[in-house]
Length: 117
Image 1 (tube, rainbow, N blue to C red):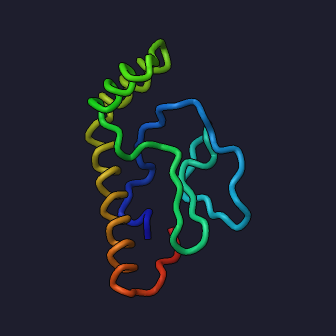
Image 2: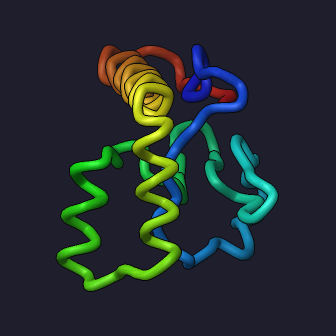
């Protein structure tokens, strides 16, 4: 399960203001926020999508701001929340990566399709 061993609620970075507004038919919502109802979802047995950034750490955010020229109040607020929650974000991100690796290993080993979250 991709969501297995995640704290609830889990903390991640949502850097951009783009949003998924509709999921494909049959998709299952795995994570949501009040502002973005489709933060993570599954389509079928082995296709997942995330709108948040599990790879985001403060150093990445700083580089993204420089590369994109994004700044202002939004960028500062996201970076501040990331600094304050860095340990929690890193823990949740490691859990997502480990869960995904388990799914891939199971599939590569000829295991049954992993269903669920």
